[in-house]
Image (cartoon, rainbow, N blue to C red; front, top):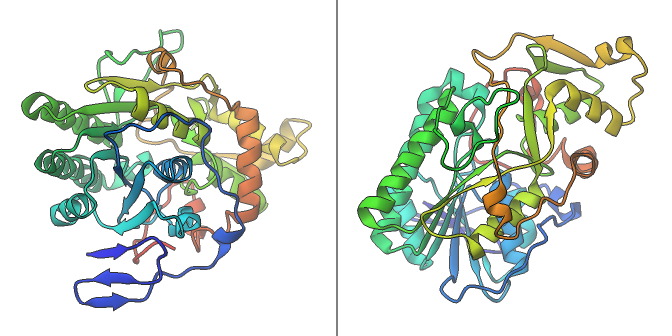
Length: 391
């Protein structure tokens, strides 16, 4: 078990002190990116544990809550530093008195319990998960272990210490494919996942529901559209394609490029989670829905335009866009109705055009060095090597 406390000068372990993880200092020149919302602090919330806090979406929330509520909330970022995490995502907070990093694994009950008890945790945001669909087709057992068993560990220890709010982050993929022309899906819609990743997240939700019913654990479930923005590990389409273009290499689409996704900028996602923390009701499910739905092919066009790469005809486009075989199954589209969250006051503020501009600018400055060597990740169907701690 390793705990890194705030300034990260050293790491405390059972056998003594160890040197801190490699710090390239690239983070020091990066902008501090957070959301925009701010609410009256909740009197019964003091210590918030955010699993996966050194990752992408959770990292945005860690930064947002730490900076926005410096005197109200103590934020504990809990992360095992898997391949897609990076301490660079939160090093900018190291001198903040209300921030702590805890190196732990959600599948290790002793580490989870020790963190909850040591920091008197009253609120949990559970983000940590295996989330890359392509990898779930190759190694689905890892997804079941982390996403299902890991969630079970979190719930059991939350019950044990009497957590007051357990906010579980799921995905819109638990609903399965939505055909063109069909209505957007409400929170009460049937869950019908079509790939091992989505199935593992749906299974985790069943455990969350069971702890709410059996043990009266106060839970909230959040299902979001695709989130993108700075700090996203380049296994996902937008950072991967932007880095390929930076290297002068073509983007490689799975199949014909027709599947559509709705994209939500990470700052808006942070605002959604902040809103749910302060205004959400226990026992409820909230969709986080974007208005920006585009096909993978259209996304390629937007990226070429955003990087000022001339594309005046089909021949130019074909030079930068290639195709490979598709996934074993690729949902054509997802579509959720976010009315319920909007009724709490949340607003999507960032258009896909503005969000991509911010994102492309960030990756042009920091994308090549933020996670160390990412060359193998940029292939159409990457395999992941787990040599040790993330950068």
